[in-house]
Image 1 (tube, rainbow, N blue to C red):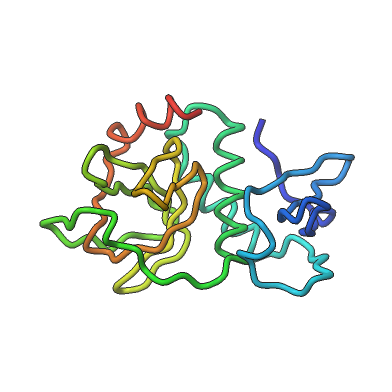
Image 2 (cartoon, rainbow, N blue to C red):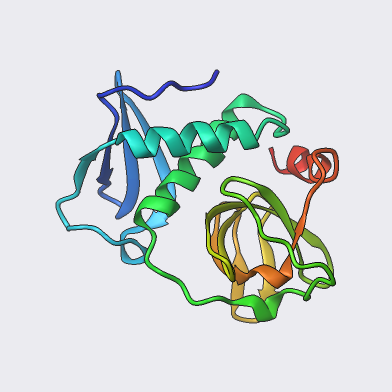
Length: 178
């Protein structure tokens, strides 16, 4: 079931300090993002905007290869949350191998990152000519002794580390996660 945004949807911070989305009709969506990683006023209560709706549908379109509708909605809503509220990050490209071909990704594009032992499937939620902010669609991965990238975790990387995923290439990884 794909959720359709309406004027009742509203962002807020839950009692556990995670960003939440009130979907109306006694339904809540809890993001994995803690308040200390986000930018907004302490008493946040903001409607799901027209811009949020546009991002949501753009992400859903790009996530068509994800195995289940519920996983597509989850990834799209987390992508909107990061794009709208996440604090600016410095690139952490050293975790990933440089690629021979430079790739300039599009918003919502599914891309890959090579962390040596495996390839990660990511979704671009913000892009510039040199860097991209992405969320992980792969299962949790340990990047080093002190850094783990969880599923839906946000990380900014230089675009020279990204490689494009053919629609069939990333599907198997995402089916395992979903």
